[in-house]
Image 1: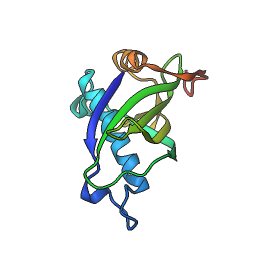
Image 2: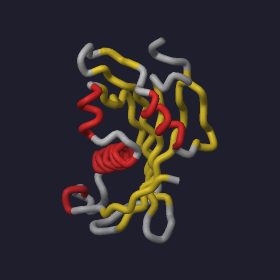
Image 3: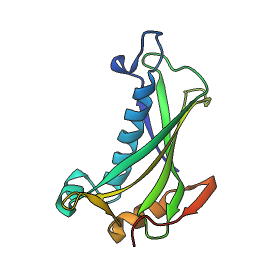
Image 4: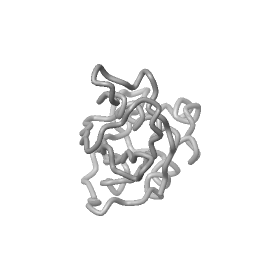
Length: 147
């Protein structure tokens, strides 16, 4: 399982004194990019290869509140993947210190060729990294977006 421990910081709070919805999206993106960096694709590699992840849809589910300075264990898994890697659905789950599931973020995306500004297949090393993620219980194979 890929996971990182983060905290709910001052800038993550909303008016009701709990973690705001967009903070979950931001932390999901941070964990996603940390995973890629640790698996051979730091930001410099994305830039050198002129490719980047593009998220087309995010779904956030809330289960328990998270307050200021609470530690969060954030996991990353793959919920769906096209055989050629052109499409993916990844899932982050946020757990409070007591192990309670606080939130789930499910993100659907693909890969943007930064030169052509069109969707593309990922490099084989990037696809291998995605395939190395644990699969969710409801994992699906997706049809590819590009050949």
